Image (cartoon, rainbow, N blue to C red; front, side):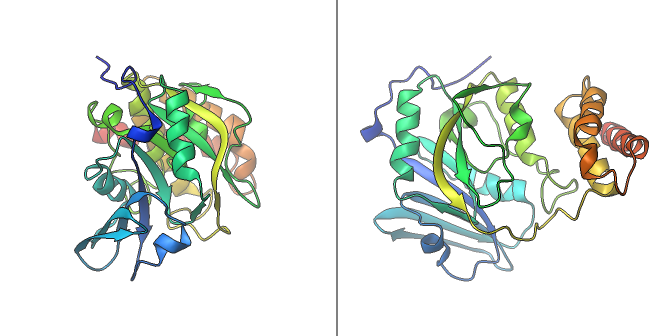
Length: 275
């Protein structure tokens, strides 16, 4: 049964926005200036201490959560479970928001009341993310091209459906990456409506070294197989096959197609044996 807020009347002057930022090893509050935070925000900082701070920044409510733990899914859940705004926006610490991002995000939901989640564009000097060029409906055939960063959602649509981030996937977890794919999978499985808009709400700073991605190696392929098993037991092998056919250029210099498929299958079987 789908539980959603899509039929509730939304007015921009009555809505609030919270940015949920996943970050690590922050020692002060300078990130708020660096990201150009101009709304309420929850900063989820995984570091070597345990501390919760609440304060005002530019007349906005800030919750600064510093916890001695690891795992990006856990980090995002820490923010999600403490959020209270009508709309939440998922961000990493390498985003610099446009000055008008709060109004832009809220107005996008007002103009698209059917949407439970909206995906936006981020400007990049060297684009690595899918660029949205027109308004799109997001479903099972195209959702895997999007990550959690740049997604905004109606908080109650997500929380009333019991949706959260899988703790076994993502940087710092058992399987590297994929927590964002599983988040969107859960949203679609619960019947939430997702759209993508060709609207830019910020930019990405120069690329940095990933905390989890070390190349298209054997572990990456096994973990990708586990992700496909988590997405769908029925379709996992089909997902693995299409991944090899479409993405083999990324790893074919080191791992041939047959070896890659074998590693993906190993990941699928390993995940299924544990579940």
